Image 1 (cartoon, rainbow, N blue to C red):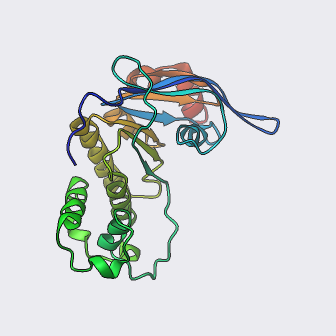
Image 2: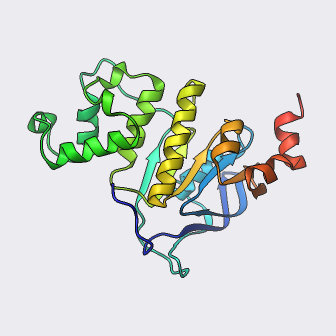
Length: 246
């Protein structure tokens, strides 16, 4: 859980990125960057291409254009450590797997019976990850017993191994109550600052984005506008998308 040094990723530079499926244009000529030490929120109406953009960044879909991982002098880095927190996790809620077991499975290839003693470096690492997300108290709870907010803490703890240079969050608190959502924003803001990682997050929580994001990108298959939350929220493009029916 050590803080990243300055010799690695500085920014993710996306140049002229387009995604097409059949005859449909999903994204068109996207030029943006995700900078280390910043939380960048992707906002827009449903179908605007936010998740498609994240999938392109993760290398899950074909695209035109470039996605460059650059260091502080602009040199491209071939391999970058990426953490990912999805909107939902599909699993059997009747499973006896505990939070500790779930996190351990992501850190070792051994079956759970071989680390049930919960001692040594593995336990130290899992304890540190849970502490980073305020989840120490749920280590022995079954995954299926967790609330939505608690489960997202566990997924975030999993995404912190190994400590990423880029964190990708696709509506990570969808369906979670406001108090738990704000706690999640506080956690990722702290992680961003303490570990100098780049965070790209799709979100519909406009007020929390205003309070916690460093940069906002408004999408509608193209970049309509980008800047600080206040700069974006004061544009006609923003008002047209979010308040035209108010």
